[in-house]
Structure formats: C-alpha cells, structure tokens
Image (cartoon, rainbow, N blue to C red; front, side, top):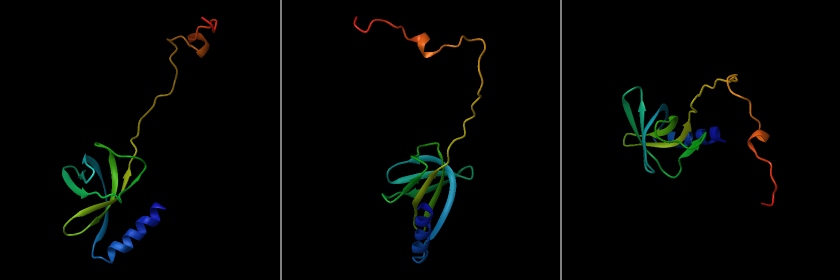
Length: 115
C-alpha cells in the first residue's frame, strides 16, 4: 500500500513541475508544521509538514534516524512519507553463575487468603 501511494504521488507531482526526492538523515527538530533534518554531516534540510504526512515503522522524535520522501519545488520542500529507521541494540544472552536462581514461587509468600 505504501509503495502504491508513493508511486501515485510520483505521478501526480511530476506532472506539476515538482520533483519527488528521498533522503536519509537525523531529526534535529520536529514540530507539527516543520521538520529539520541533519543530512551529510552538517547540512540541514527544512521540510514543511501537513496533515497528509504518512509515518512508516512508528512515530518519530528528535535524534531518530529517518528516511524521508518529500516533494521539492523551487520554493519549498514538503514531506510526504517519513520512515523510521529502527535503532540496533546489542544484547548479551547468557547466565550469571554468581547469583542464586529464583523462581516465582520463591518470591511469593503463601498465606491464608482471609487475613
């Protein structure tokens, strides 16, 4: 569905003299009406946001890495699709022999239900 929407936007905006572009960057600032991305190190890209913006992979916030598909014209850049790039977190799976293994029954004290 997202691919179909992007293709339709590409066709519609190409007939209006506007260009559809895509970039990857880090969100520096986000408000309901604008988005500022840091792309290629120090360069900033200001995008206008409307109620028609679609979010893919969840909500975004400051310091998130995103891929933005936007419509560019000589006056403005208008965001169309904002795709969140998930952060990778490393987990070390294993066990610690220095601690005693506890189960759920070890932590709950069994008593009379009427006290």
